[in-house]
Amino acid sequence: MLHKQVDKSHYEFSQYMTKARWCSMWHQIDELLRLAPENVLEIGPGPGLFRAVAGAFGLTVDTVDLDPELRPTYVASATALPLKDGAYSVVCAFQMLEHLPYEESLRAFDELVRVSRRHVLISLPDATTVWRYLAHIPKRGTREFFLPRPRLRRPVHRFNGEHHWEIGKRGFPLEKVVRDFTRSATLTNTYRVSENSYHRFFVFSNG
Image 1 (cartoon, rainbow, N blue to C red):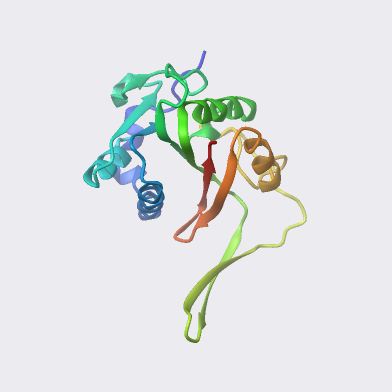
Image 2 (tube, rainbow, N blue to C red):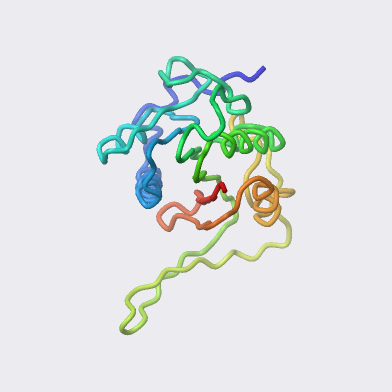
């Protein structure tokens, strides 16, 4: 049986909502607005800020979490959503699936795909160290790009009480994660957030 990993106090503003996390939330809302969903389901709402901000832009967001203290719409496990197939236009899970052992995260992703009609939008931690560069191209403006830091071996991930795995750690290269997650949905875009390169976004199409 799954249990919550952190107490509600984990989401206190001063320790949880860093500037980098705010930047990631901007990308969450931006991607969601591009998808123009009729309704949205978020798995793992944390302090509820995504739902609040999305609501300010006219989006209806329901939530799922194991912890009733977070006041989710549904108290349930991500691996067994109490919802019908295609119940939501877009299903989201931001920095959540890594809190499950890898094989369980794949089962949870299958559930996200099952209850979505159109798209699944997620973000995952990408521990691959990169250097960020900005280049000014005449008549095209400033362009940003990342260069991976060379290293002989990938670091080993050790469970820290929250994350069971991370992209870029030994055994979890990006290619493997993409291959495993695209067994049940089509990947249409993936990128690292420029202001917070630890967060990698994935946009999947379902059907």
